[in-house]
Picture 1 (cartoon, rainbow, N blue to C red):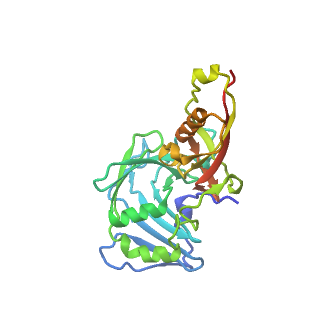
Picture 2: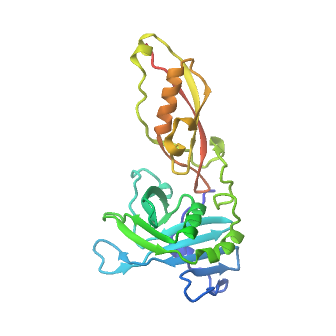
Picture 3: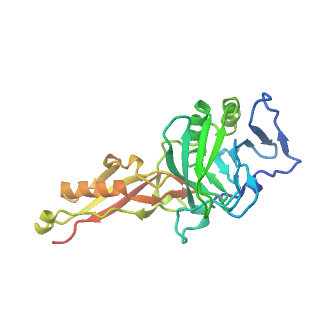
Length: 289
């Protein structure tokens, strides 16, 4: 059964009978820590340094929250933005699979762009690799996120994650490290048969077959395997990440096929609602003469 992203309100309003607020280790600690005793769970909340406009016509502003949550040994890092986030998927994409563009910058590093999954109410954005985000924040707490509310221009949200290192022992105890934080090995690549939602091609460059080979009447079929990462891309988009399983008999066509597949973009495969890396096999045939 798939695990859906649910709204921030449902996540952060536990029963008073089971919720207990852990005392902060220092008065200057900006993190709010919540532990649940009825089930293994740990939540860290960090308010943004700035507020953003809640909606286009709204007269009030909201303060986004950065949330680190470990529940049932599943680690999530997400931003509760307080407004509906833009989706860069088409209208036919199921809500549970829709992604939103996020531009992230830490300290003086160059900004990086990625796609984060949206919650079902579309107001929260989940980082594709939560463990990596935590490692980066622990070493450089200055975080700036640029998000795009629906129908509005991009908004900049600033966080100062100082003090996170004080809580990492709690996070590691609730979600033991050694993987992506979701109980899976960091280098584990899944087969197509094990996923709930397969990877689907979003865009692909044309496969240009050299006219000389076409006129020569060379034909064949190549079987290749490509690893699609959690962002729906071949890691780093390089040809070496595509493996020829069975050659077409033409080295030129094999290499052209590898080059095309390395540049294709996919909707990532999902397992229990979480994007996972998958080994995808496909066949390509040479054009006829």
